[in-house]
Image (tube, rainbow, N blue to C red; front, top):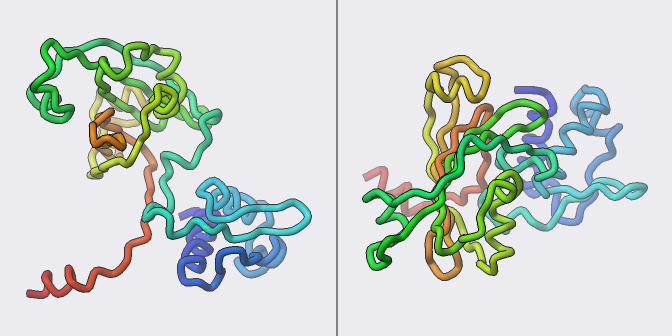
Length: 238
């Protein structure tokens, strides 16, 4: 683990241990540099990560403060969403209209919608000039008839909200994989490289699935805040 990542993780831990409380001022860059025996540049890189996550705020001339956001979501950090949209480029592999197969018919609950079509697109996400992610996504055509490649190159979720839909939550499944030759060619990496496969279902406030995506991501990391479940622990013991 890089020093900046360890420092960011350690400060995160101390925030969740209540050693640094919401609204509290953190030690200065110089003090943190002395505490972790690293350069101030490394401290700034660690703090940048914490700012991107949203757990600290830097106020010029005043200092570094803990944000009041830590219990609003169990997701603390996700390397997919650390970067701002302007720092991410998308290369479209294809964009097309498809007929639902049996699986997609069930996912989007299309049984009572005759001749329903779906949009499907595949894109490579480029961060810091490196190809990091392959995303294949499917969305209902009837919800988003105006979807196009320009939108896909930017933020699809921003477009969904602009269409008047309220996104409620995502159901996400992770499992480790090795990159296939086809995907290795797209990501400019070696066949068999370790990666994370991420399957996402996006749910609207009305309970409808608006997106089903399968993502292959290199260098993926995620951190969650998980309360201890005593009942689950007792069940597992027995």
